[in-house]
Amino acid sequence: MPVAIIETLMPETPPLYSTDEGVVRILGTRVSLDTVLGAFLSGSTAEQIAYKYPSLKLVDIYAVITYYLRHRQAVESYLAQRHQEAESIRQEVEERFSPAGVRERLLNREV
Image: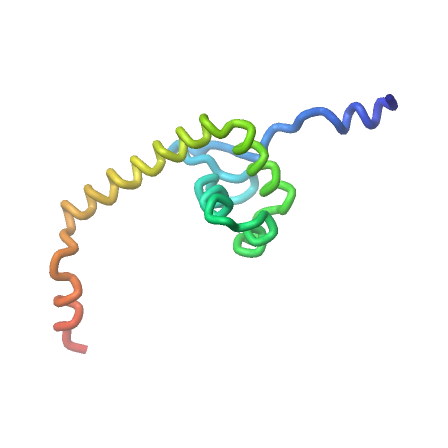
């Protein structure tokens, strides 16, 4: 087999990076892994995801989906952790700033 073909068949690292806060994002963008996989798992194609998020390259979307399919357990564990963190933050915010009566207060505001 020619050397050029062998080099092109080498595996590539997925285009992902982790922020200081532990959020995994697509390399070169601020789009999170959660966002891409959320769209994919909701039935969006890679092309539809690229249309919704123009900062993403189609090839990177396919690479991320491939990474997910090959490492489903680890990625789903990460997504569950992120969901748990988001739920914890939501509860904390609701405790500090109760949503009770917000609609009524807004409707009663003088314009």
